[in-house]
Length: 360
Image 1 (cartoon, rainbow, N blue to C red):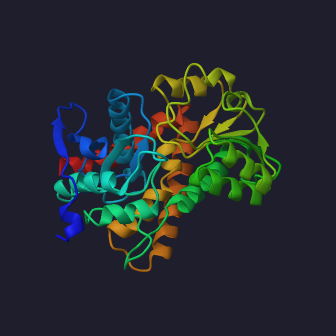
Image 2: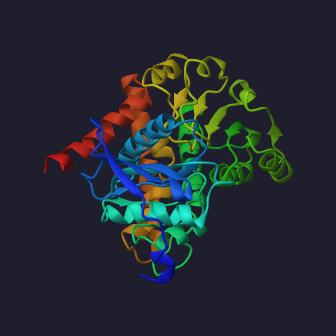
């Protein structure tokens, strides 16, 4: 180890009992203000892969609930993209704008390294490629780097491209055409993914209604894409054709679904449904739901190219994105034939992809 690495604070890593996950760990290093979790939902397809998120969670229980839901979603997302990867996720409690430090990141990276490759991390909410570079100084199990032989860089543009593809496929199934010209799309969340998605939608001729907790992001989107800005709570009742949630999860629920005036929901947020029953609420209202872990799979495809050490990454990623389009098209068609929610169809299809591998 270098002198700098030897000064890194080794965190306390405590395993938490879980009936739903292969392994869950609490990571704690008070010297650097670190409290977080790593959850491995499944490694039946390969090492668990999923991003590292940093948010100012209200409590450890809230953070733990989030990491459990997110890691389970990653199992299905990686299966949907037909990747030889399992599902995992990591979260750190704290405001990334004020609490994120190299010391904190390095300490967390030591916990990842200690898992010996069972979990690979990458950029997620509150993180950047430069943060991944800091982690790389302490662990080899990190992707989404800006440089290196297999560096995949920021996955956000690829994630946005996959969501855009899902919106077009959903539009064909709901409206009879993939043409988005003149369609009104309400976009919730204007971070890296939401911003890139807005660019693609505007280029396709869609008009945008947007919201974000950061006023500067809203102002930039209004200026660059002629978007209409609304308050955070008003986005649910916006007069639009399509709703694209690209912020936090659990935003489709018994409180918000009755407000929706759209015919299609397709976005980048993970775990958009607060409960399984919310899929039926959307179905009952005639709102087509493009399952989130299929719609937003572009980012993990991009990251997987680095984890799997893929040469000539561009064609490989493009091919996987096209396969994801076919998957979305197939599950929406099956949902229509069977008169069931696409969320239920997607879960059944991914279970079919997981179970044979798990049984080997």
